Amino acid sequence: MSRAQRKIDHIKHAVEVGQVRAHGFEDVQFVHQSLPDLSVDDIEYDCMLGELSLSSPILINAMTGGGGEQTLKINQGLAIVAKECNVALAVGSQMSAIRDKSEQSTYKIVRAENPKGIIFANLGSEATVDQALQAIEMLDANALQIHLNVVQELVMPEGDRDFTNALKRIEKIVKGVTVPIIVKEVGYGMSHETAKTLKEIGVNIVDIGGYGGTNFSKIENMRRNRTVDFFNEWGIPTVSSLIEVASHSPAQTIIASGGIMSGLDIVKSMRLGASCVGMAGYLLKFLLENGTESVIEEIRNLHDDIRFIMTALGKKNFSLLKEAPLVIKGPTYHWLQERGINTQIYSK
Image 1: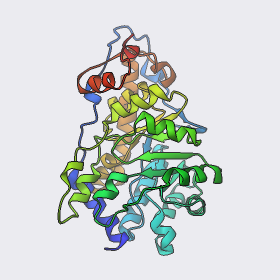
Image 2: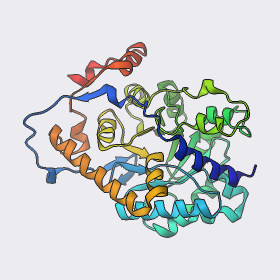
Image 3: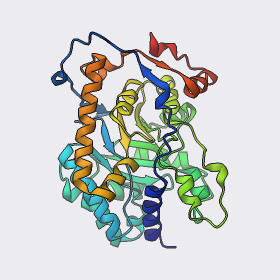
């Protein structure tokens, strides 16, 4: 099967599979504040992602490209949304465009539609420094995502089977490019040990990509003759992964992603240590079913919800939100206790 056809299959199956919603946000509850002393009009939701200044905590996270006209139209629509809503945008892996120049237009369209926006390039951990430079130049990108998807590759019928020296390749890219590097998991979560290892080679931004959103094991199993079902529930839930990394690597900038589908999920993520949040499958479904305007409307609704929630908490901005007390319960509490993390620091 061609790489382009595989990209199209991934989009089709992603919509069919939907979101797992096993991310753990239901285990996080804010302590209500009866006297917030704040107006909705006072709320500020701009934020910093490392050195990048963002007007919104919402990042339209990596989805597609390299699948011909169909993926070009998706990326074009997402770029229009990003420009209209003033949010950052990441493309899917650009390796297909590096290997096949005819696919470059499916990625370049995002910069053509959004010339002044914040755009992230994307490659896998197999990439070389030269390929990283090509991906960045292709989009005049503000940062480069390097995605880690070991389990997806193992389940993928034609996927990689050798993951040796990935860390060394990432380190070379960190040293060889001038834009920020974001290392991103793709739905299996990132442990604090992995985040620490990445920090040691100079990776200052990680996207924890937790379990609970689009399930790439299920997607790839739909493409196999013999399924490997034991990977369908593999991974660290989004909330557990976010707290792990934030607790052990406070100096590391974190993007929270993995099943985030509401303003409340976003505010909880920001309180727990994220600098912004990535949304992909949830927004893709809006785009494919109802078009660009529906995605624009949904992001505007999310911005309104963020303002309402932060008003109720009495926190004007995300810096002050870090002081909002919350209680962690259920499986997330159990996970964190077993991993040696004191959850009372969030409630008191």
